[in-house]
Length: 279
Length: 251
Image (cartoon, rainbow over all chains, first blue to last red; front, side, top):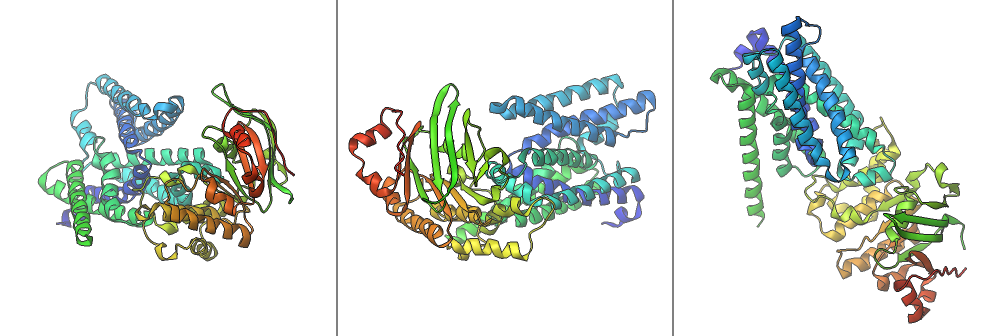
C-alpha cells in the first residue's frame, strides 16, 4: 500500500512531512494539554489561515512568490501568539477571552484577503482540510528545519517546561523565568501549527496536537511516558490517515482525525477494562 | 539565640486598600522550627509571599541569609511547600520521581541535563520522606498525606537551609498529621533545616516547634511553646480578636 508513497516524489514529500508533524504536533501537544491551553492551538490555526490567505493573495495579485504561503502563515501565527499573550495580560481575570478574539480576528482577516484575491477555491480547500499532494520539496525542507529546531529546543528546555506546566507558582519561586519560558513555548506552538497545516488543514490541526495526548493520558503513568506514547499514537494516525486518505480520495485531515478518534476510544476502553479487572 | 536567617523590619503591606500587615518586625533564627499561627486573613500567607519575593512590601526592609532582599539571588537555599501544592491537578500524569525532580530544575540551570548525581539526589529525597516504594507511581493516585510527603521531597531535593510550609496539613487525617510532624522534627534536628510552618493545628505543633509566632496584622507574640501555652486567655483574645498594636519580643 505504501508503494505509491515511495514512488512518486510529491507523495514522498507528503509522507515524510507527515512523519515529522506526527512527532512535533503531539510533542508540543503534551504541554498544551496539561497546561489547559488546547484552545490556543485552534485560535492560532485560524490566524495561520489569515497568513496563508495573505500569501496566496500576494501570489495571485502581485505574482509575489518570494514569501510562500507557508512562510506568511508562519509569520502570522507567531504574531498571533504574541497578541494572545498580550491579551491574556490585559484580561488577567478572563484570560480565555483572548482566544475568541484572536480566532475571530484570524477568520475575519482571512475572509478579507480571500475576497480581495477574488477567491481561490481548490487551494483554499486544501488548506482547510489538508491535502496529500500539497507538499513541495521546499515546504518539506522548511518543515524539516522547523522540526529539528523544535525537538532541539524542547529537549534543551524540557525540565523547565515540565516544571512550569505542573506548578507555575513553584516554578517561579524556585527561580525559573516563567514568563520567558512560556513565551518561548507559545512561539514553538505557533511554528508547529504553521508546519502542520499543509497536511491536516487549518480546521483539524489542533486535533493532531490534542487527541493523541488525550489518548495516552489514559494509559501513561508519568509525563515522559505520556509524551512517547502520544508520539506513537500521532505517527500511527498520520500514517494510516495519509495512506487511507490517498486511496479513498479523502482529504487527509479527515482521515487522520478519524484514526486519532478511534485510538482515543480504544485507549478509553482499555483503561476501563483494566480498571474493572482491578476491582 | 542563633543568628537570624530572615529578619524583617517595619514591614507594612496593603492589599486592595486593606492593611494586611502593619509595621511588622519579624525574626526567624537559624535552626528554629517555627510555627506561625493566627486567624484567617491575619497575614500569614502574605508574610510568606513577601519572604519568597512573590509580593513586595509597601515599606520596610527584609534581610535574608544576611543579605538585603534586593541582592539575594540564592533561591535554592529556600524550599517551599505551598498551600496549593495539595490542590494540584490530580489528573496530571507525573510520577513521584518526576515531581521531585522539579525541585532541582532551577538549581541544575538552563541548558543542562540531570546527571547521575542529580538522579541519586532525587532518589535520596524520596527516601528521606519514606516514599521509596512509590517512586515510579503516578502521584495523582496517592493519598493526600503521601502527596504531601512528595511535595516535601520536591522542596528538599535542592538541599535547602530553610523550608517554608504553608498550611501543609490541610486535608490530612489526624494520624498522618502526627507522622508528618515527626518527619519535620527529624528534618529540623538531623538535617539541620530551619523550618517556618504556617498552620492552624496549634495542638500538635506546640509539641514539636521551638518557636511560635502569632500574627494578626501585627506580630502579637513570638516566643517558645512553653511561653505560648502560658499565655492567658486575655492575651490570646488579643491575637485572635481585635487587632492591637502590641509587638511582643521575648528575647
